[in-house]
Image (cartoon, rainbow, N blue to C red; front, side, top):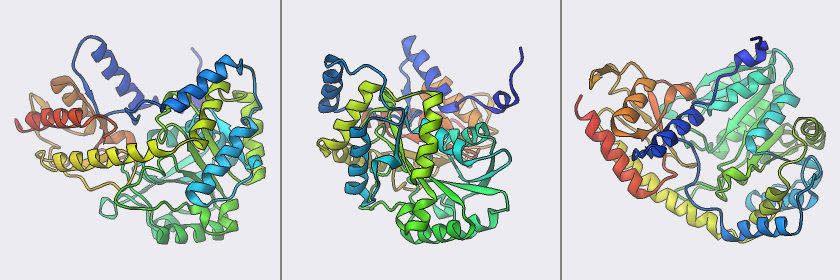
Length: 396
């Protein structure tokens, strides 16, 4: 069977593979606790669900404009202004089938074969694959745990070559929850402008910040960096709408037109009914976000406390998103129930097999000495799941 070289380069998503395995075990009646896929466990708010039902009843089930309906693009502009004081016009917005689709659009219109994209690690699993799909070369910059896994301006500048075209900036971060401060962003923006490097700024977790933090977008440091930035966001995380598949990008009109033209051939429009639901999400009451954020912060505190009491584990306090990236160096090399733990995959497999808890191996995020835990699950599950892991590791 012939496959293209591009297809051969792509690896499946380890987070989705893990989620599928955990769900298959649950379907067999096994009491699996999942700290795997990053998906809020809250229901989509009732007003948003009602808007979708009304769209169906009104027969809003046909093709729309490829880049999204005008009312939704206007709603995106209004929400970006209200949340982050960022000014955009509807012709700068492209609504896509999830933020992952928006990222695909961005990399495809920015990268030629052999162009380099600088990617701080640990990083979300799909960035490297999407860059390769676009013909680009991921250049990984190892961000230190001592610096909350955040790339410094100096590290960024040292990674730049004549082939550098794009910087990928994810804040708050998946998998670490790290949040870039304004001071570092300002300096990174200066470097990007000096070298004319585009920024793909994934801000999907921007409304999930803790400890009183306020969000700063790299696009806010003047018109020059704004013209070089494609902001990526969506409704999946903030409004518990992962399955609705509505993401969006905000960028210079020339970039937006290119992404809209690309999308018109690849997928046509995003789901018409989900677009109507997204308008209600963005324009309607916002209290559900704060309620979810407060609950996530409490869960974060509990998870970090319990992880730091597990033998061989340690974890800092993430500033955003809903992940804890736990250092497992103290477990590596040990033998547990006949298995020698050589890396994160060995440990994740053992934990799932022996105590029915799903975690994501850090190697998926380019760091093998870590595991990622999602606290987008109940406090009861956090308590029970981490107690199971602690009991297993006490045997080593």
